[in-house]
Amino acid sequence: MQRIRLRYTKRGRLRFTSHRDFQRAFERALRRSEVPMAYSAGFTPHPKVSYANAAPTGTGSEAEFLEIALTEARDPDTLRALLDASMPDGLDVVDAVEARTSGLADRLTASVWEMRLDGVAAEDAEKAVVAFMDAETVEVQRRAKNGVRTFDARAAVVDLQALDPQPDRSGDRPCAILRLVVRHVTPAVRPDDVLSGLRAVADLTPPVPAAVTRLAQGLFDEESGTVTDPLAPDREAAQAVTTADPAAAATAPEGAGSA
Image 1 (cartoon, one colour):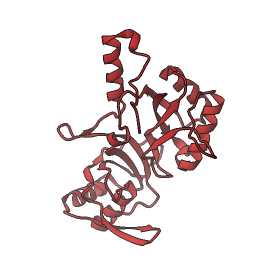
Image 2 (cartoon, helix red, strand yellow):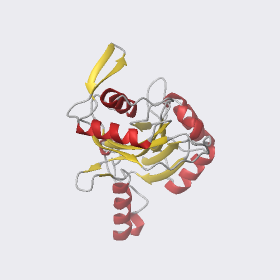
Image 3 (tube, rainbow, N blue to C red):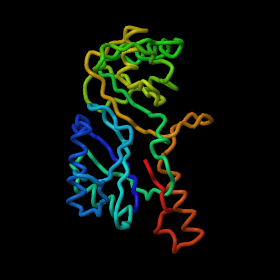
């Protein structure tokens, strides 16, 4: 069984696609592309697709990941192109590697987010960011199935910065851009929780909903302070096999690649 790991995006209006909607669109793309999928056993077999840490509905993303299991070997780049052509514009399959290491989900430990706050002056956003980062704890509330939950939104935030605005539309309305690096903890701290925290510590309330996009997710490198590409270990493993024995490059190690 060959396993392929894919990175895909949610862009433009497709950021409002729910995870279930994406699953349906992706399974249709698998059928259109005639991908030789492996299926689960039981009364209702389904294609073996493992989704990892999907972004919330309403947020854009440049870094969503999944893994598929195939019954026949396929070239990852060719497979990526076929699937991308079968997906709606905005749900774009942008990268593919053969799984040659284990634990993709274990390498998704942090995310980089960009939050566009239309109607917020850059200097106001900067003051709110300083207040948030200087706080030891920032308690926020989120409505859950069992009622309202209170938790600390500050501890998971590695970095939060107000960037110089770069307007991409006409008009004189101010716009603040925030860059957020947050660890994946339990309970998960999402961008909207950080925005609630900014409102709590500095009364920062955008007049319109923020436009939020995940720019990256992967392992957080403590030394560099960056979030690394989670597919890099598979590329490096494939390159090592190719260098050592080109004839073995087409076959992944048995059992590799569980997400």
